[in-house]
Amino acid sequence: MNWFDRMMEHDRQRRAQWSALPVTSVALFIGSTFFMGATTGAISQLLVPRYSLEFVWYLPLITGIAGAGVAWSGTRGKLWWTFVVVAAFILVMEWVNPSLKGPSRAVLIPQEIRHWVLTSAAVIFVAIGGAWTLAMTFINREGQRFFQVQTEMRLAGEIHQTLVPSIESRIGDYEFYGVSLPSGTVGGDLVDVLDGNGRWLAYVVDVSGHGVSSGVLMAMIKSSVHTALRFQPQLDGLLEEVNRVLCSLKATNMFATCGMIAFSPEHGLRYALAGHLPILHLRGREIDLLREGSLPLGIVPSGKFQAISCELKEGDVLVVLTDGLTEVSGKNGEELGLDWISQALRENGPRPAKEIAAQILAAVQGRGKQSDDQSLLVVRRITELA
Image (cartoon, rainbow, N blue to C red; front, side, top):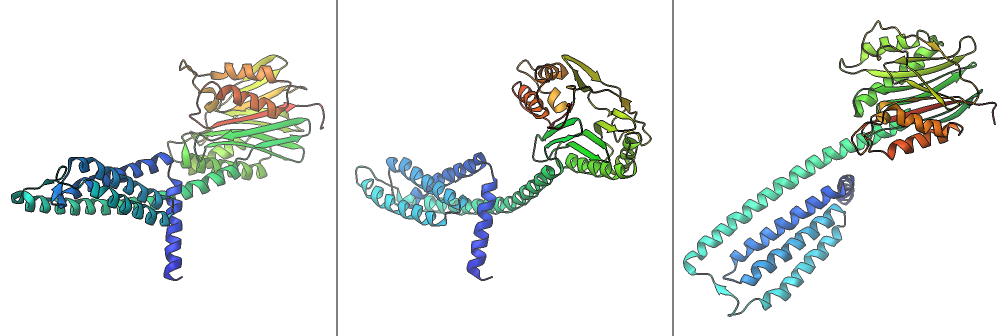
């Protein structure tokens, strides 16, 4: 790679770094260059033998705008604009400077202090130049680190989307729809549906905390569920195996709640809760809370988790959700809880699973801002496949 290619590659990386920054951060940087340029313009007046009170205001304004223009062209990767800004600055100075020179406006600096003024101005220029050089070095170094982190976070977000895709499927007489909305780039919630040999397993996991650490633990739980299900196809014993794996791998201050629903020809429909919110069971216009459960996963290695039988008739709906939905606060600061979501479920129960989920999410999002991962799984009993 020759020097020109290296220069273009460096320029491309710099544009990518600045593009990754929020607009407000770039605006702050450009604003700082405006004031730096204005300061330089104000001090530069000390280097001329005459000064003008009008020039005190004009020159800092002109140099500040020029500095901001150069900064903008640099952050946008438009280097040719730098030459345009510099040329415009020179032309403006050539036009403004003569108009401010004259016996009536310019005042002669006394000779006895002129040497002191010139020396002070030179020292200030050197100090400003050194400060600006160090500041730009710091910005470039931290910018590269920030860009690397942003790139890794973007990749982590893409991996998260692959691990937790939206689910829309039908298995036998059951219709499924699941979605997980992370509060940041990477979330700790998991929605998953598995089927095979006339059996299916649908579950929701909510890992404590936020961000990458929760996302990593979530991925480990999904992997352990898929692995354990190969050797333990029944709900009985499945959570125990996942819990043992989790306790041996996670940090001591982390845990996960889980709500599982499973169907098999031998045992019918059953559910299990590990420290999770109750499962909403819609029957006609009535809603029951399936709440029998145990401790969260990752608390006690020898924890036991019980599978409870339940019945889902034609048109009945089960909803498994995470506390990111129930803990949304309204205008009065009160959390929504399960009552608000139950009402939305009751009003939309006859609809398909996807529409039920959409209406619940819309009802929650209309009440307040999201502060935690929000996940929802809807299981609906239907008469037959369409």
